[in-house]
Length: 183
Image (cartoon, rainbow, N blue to C red; front, top):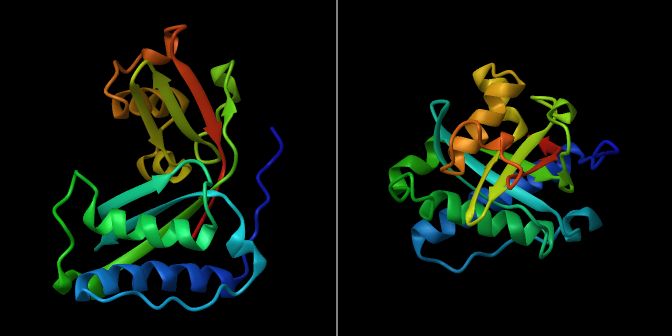
């Protein structure tokens, strides 16, 4: 797997975070959002992305799209609204929480099937585990945030998929890794 080298300038990162914030704010206010024009052609690329919301360093919502099926700027606006109002793990975001939000955006590189778990580097790779109708995904930063080694990262990704923690040992389970640009 070649390294995912998608790079964003400070201006592009600021633009995407602003879009996410405006998307959430307009939904809270019941207004049609007026988004600024994309700052570069990179905003038109079709890449997967996640938007995670935190308040006081605690997760408040995190939703993403693994595959880039529309322009990046549009994916960010949609995922921001979903993280705020559609993450089933949390109650819908309230207006009073808006100014407390910390936004973290992850732009995903392509998925690569893993044939040997030694190919997984916690902190560098995110994981997607699939078996039958079950799937679970953890972003690369999750392993770092929790201090997980490879086996723990795999076990927790299996659990996220509602599968046993050793599901990666089952030949019916498919494991994919990916890299991400996180800001």
